[in-house]
Structure formats: structure tokens, C-alpha cells
Length: 534
Image (cartoon, rainbow, N blue to C red; front, side, top):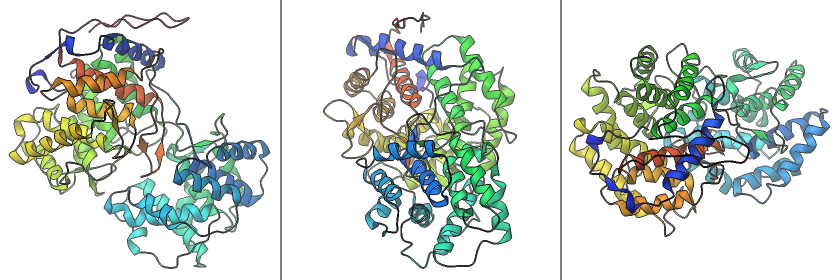
């Protein structure tokens, strides 16, 4: 996600073409992010409450008649406020609050399944069905495709989730109980006070799968107490305990593009070194052990940008972790060798691997060719880990740019289609939305601006910058709707990511503007602000 090297960019744009408030807005965001860097170097900002986990928790409490009256009341209040939200949230909240068996609405299931990659369609249909059964809806279906429960090419999180789903749907259909091995797998995720891999959704799904099985009541009760440790002040429950490592790697890279103080950047880097996994990769949180391509790739880019020699051992291990999961098709998956390759993860890996000079030419070239094969005719790609299609677009665009010397005609054509799609998507207000028909939002606009910053016409970039600056608050924060999804297509919100991607996009833009201008963060009441100079 780092900016392209100057030799890969068109001529610079004069500063006079861009909003005069650009330096001060960037300064406010930088100052706000610097305040979020902890003494240990981590950037911590909690995942906000989500209807899905809140509904599952309330359903468990009601199903077992357990106490926790205060927690239950908070969940009810939270879900009541979301009965008029999006279609999916409204139906989930209504199902959990009303209780009793009712049919699952087909249009809701289709809303879920149509937003996931084809390779996950059968599995996500079963997951969606099981989630509503957990909330009390009628089963309504007898047979399932075997593909929905095939765990042969799944990472550990998905294996546990599929096992829980199979248990819930099987019990609803009157099938025999879980095998001893499956039961042991689910129980192994339950430890007092600890949410396995930091994932509340999987934790709650396992509890629903174990509920009513002989000898599991104490496990379910203890698991609920553990889950409720993460109930938030609004009464709701989050998707995950935190996304601290993902927030840290993205914030570190964004702060580097803005010329933040080296001492702070090295503090961030030292923290990342301490949470690097044994396989050389990084996970979204230090509570998890399963590393992923996304966090690993951005960590490599950040450490390389900051000090490629000082962090060479961590970078080398990270690169080895990426190469180890590379698919036979040339692409890269999100989690683990042998799992399906994906566009966004392949682009992320190429961006990281492009920092290395001695990789075989075929490693990057075959990854880029994989991307050309799965690009749609309109320039877009299959759904990734963002609600915004622009997320994958900007990362593929950068992957081609960083690998400019290895770009074949088909790869260059792929990049041109991305540029054309992004330019055509710009709205009258200068911003961009997550999908066709969506309102403009800062995160989607940030993704688009990164693409526009590599173009020749400054006008679209200037309009996008004006939109972004209008959403930067006085304290440097940026408000934007939920963008990341997990599991697909359920969105979750971590507010600091809006600040991070806005700053990253403005960093890409500033790399095209000459002369660079000094940034002096604006004052905030009661706080001294460090000066930041580019």
C-alpha cells in the first residue's frame, strides 16, 4: 500500500491545483494517529458492537435461562435500536428479539450469498442458514451440498466454524449428534476468560453448537461469561476482541507516508517484531495465532520503508511466510497454503514482494497474470474483505505500479481498466461509494484517490481531496461507515481505519505534489501537538 517510487509516476502536479487546507488537514490526522500509538507501539481502537454477535448472545441467554440480567437488558436495548437498520441487521435483531420459530426470509439469505466469492458460496449459505437457526428461526431445509461442509481446503478458523454450523443444522434436522472428534474440536476452543483467536462470532457459534449436548452445560455457561467480558458500553457485542495488529500496520505505513517522527515509527516497528508469528507472518491481533497474507504484506512494506537493514530478519521471515502459501495458480490466499487464491490478497503479496530485488521473476509475474485472469470485464474483481469494490482495485493498481518493469501488455491493460472504472465512478460531490448506488464515503474515496494519484489528470484527484478534507474533523478523526467484512459479507467497524486510510491516500497524493509543504498539526484543546514536516 506504500506510494509508488517517483520513477514510476507521471510528472508532479503544482500545489496550486489542490485545496489550501490539505497540509493542515493532514497534520490533524497525523497528530490524532500519533496520540493513538501506545507506549508499546501498538495502535489500539476497539471493534464496535455488531448486531450479529449481539443477537447470538441474547439468543443463548434466553435459550438457557441463564442469569446475567444486566447484560441481557443491555443487549435488548442495543438490538431495539437496530430494528430499523439495514435489511440484514433489522432481520437479525427482529429474530433475536421476538423469539419463536419463523421461516427464514429467502431474500435475506440471497443478500448474504451474493456478496461472497464463488468458492465460498455453498459454505456461506449454510452459515447464514445456521445463524438464523441459532436465533430461533425454523430450519426449513433438509439437504445441503457436500461442498458446504468440506473442510479439506479450509484454514483452522473456518474448520471450527463449519463444524459448528454442521452441528447446528444437523440437530435441527434431527440427525445424530457430533462425532467424538468434532465435539473435541469445538470444546478445545473454550478456555475460561479467553476468546479463541479473538473471534467472538466463532466463540458464540461454538457455544450454540454445544448447547443442549450432554455434559456441556458448564462449558456453555463459562463460555457465555467469557463472551460477556467483551460486552460494550452500548450494550452490544463486537465481532472480534480487537484488530490491534491490523490497525498498527496500516497506521504505521500511513504515518510513514506523512513523515511522522522516526522515534514513533520505530516504536511501532519494534512492537510488530514482538508480535510476529512463529511462521514469520502476522495476524490481525496478537490474540490470534493464524497469520494472514494481508497483515503480513503490509507489515513487510512498513518495515521495509522504515529501515530495510535494521528489520531485515523480520522482513525475510515475512517474505518466506508469503511464499509458503503461494498457490499453484500463481495467486495468494488469505489464510494458509492450499486455500483458494484471492485477488486482493494476491495484490497485497505482490506489493510486499516488490520490495525484494532477488525474487524469481516468475513469482511476481505469475501473480499478476493470475489477477488478469480473474478481473471482470468492467475492471472490477470478485468480492474481497471490504464492502467497497475500490479496496481491491487500488491494491491491484499499486501492485502493477510497483512491478512496472515486469508488467506484460495484459497486466498493463488490467491497470488501465481499473483506472477507467475508478474515474467513471466519481460522484458529483467528488467522492466515491462502496458500490453502485452507495453514498460517497471517506474510506471508499481514499481508496479511489490512491488510484487517481497515479494518473495524469489532477482534476479528479483534486475533487476527491476536497471531499476527503470536508470529512476531517477538528481532532483529526474521520467518520466513515463500516467497510471491512468478516466473515464475508458481514461488515464491522473499527473507527481508526478511516483515519488511517484517509491519511494514506493523502500521502499518495502529496507524493505527486511539488513542492512538498511543511505540515504543522493544528492545536487541540488541552493537548500539545508535535510539528510534522515532510
